[in-house]
Length: 416
Image (tube, helix red, strand yellow):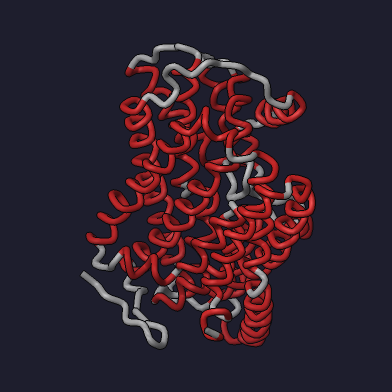
């Protein structure tokens, strides 16, 4: 019994269940629950920037073949684009088959201030600026804001610069290795309070939005969850089979992270833990350091499924028939706009609004319909994003010959 009570998996599950009960019975607990959830996510967020920086720098500086860095990055981006395109296409096909928006009575009665915020954020999104934004104007500002792409860019340059120093750079590498270990040790301590964070996230969701609010949009929610499950056990499972590793063993290996993401609705809450887990699973530090952080901006499979299905859903709600050519155009636009989404709850709304503004077919104010139910779909998005990024890391590591299974004590990694 004592072993069960001290198991992190059990504690997180218990936290989620308690969150549902408390959120349902004590509506006034919502603000406090939100504070608990946000505090836990902040604890994780404060570690993301240094962990990403040290991991990438050490990975690149430790590579004997610098050309390999460009090759790994190129492979990763190509993989991201191919797989996320599959996610978009599947989302649109399922939305057309299940027609979750058919018969829905459109009553836009959402919080107008929230809607205005999303519309303003969407109107300010310019994709040329997004690309230019990758280069930080101030490195310290990038670390202060936790901008993953800017930190990634600077870390790659720093790693290249350090690798050119040869033997004189060894003391810096040694120092960075020690500092990296310090941050991972802090991360392990923070993860012990994950059950509390999961409790707060679930209690806030239930107390704020309630269970009854899900009924009118249950069809869309069910469609998004069904599509995400199909994508994971269909598309991603096929990729696992082709690269000769077991999806089930991989999912068992990251079960704690899946539960934490389910409770917090944020894939960023396990970013440092996923980097450590992928190394333990057998991927090299250099591949993990490049693929995982990049995946949080360029390989958001769950977000792309949500975006594609939401656009078709809103077209059905407003009784706007979309031709095949218009749907192909939407796929093309989403392939671009979805790359601007981050792994934080709420970013999907900004991307969705900007996409509607770009296609000029569906009223942008339609996103207000989704405001009440978005939080309940964010778990599916975040979990799919996280699982997809881990599989991408294993695939790239195997393609580079940088994968050496190192099963943890008591577990055996099974290949097909």
